[in-house]
Amino acid sequence: WGSLHVLPEYQRMGIGSALLEWGFQQFNLEKEKVWLGTQMRGRNLYRRYGWEDVDHVDIDLSDWGGKYRGYGIHRSPLMLRQPGRFQRVEGIANE
Image 1 (cartoon, helix red, strand yellow):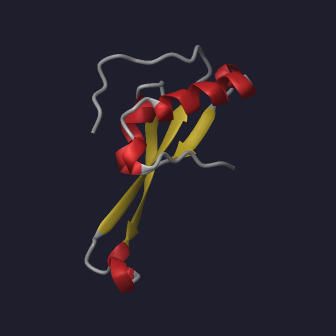
Image 2: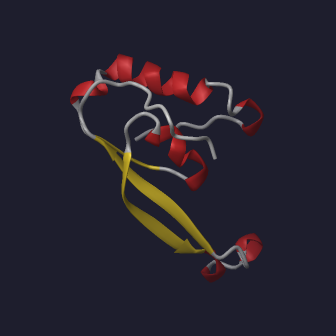
């Protein structure tokens, strides 16, 4: 288990991509299937490196009350990357 987070003030500077590349090199993940769950705002980062949507988890935040009441449905994509060369896929925009 692990998490990848970049503080908002440092996003869109290539830091997330650099961390993904480092992880793939350190753990030789090009030979493995790699599953992950992410937030919608991070989805395109992973898509640019070959992950595909396979499912999602929806959480109705109105069920929880408190400060999240009224936020509606929170969707977390579940993604899979098949084994293969780790490289950036061009043409996928930032969101």
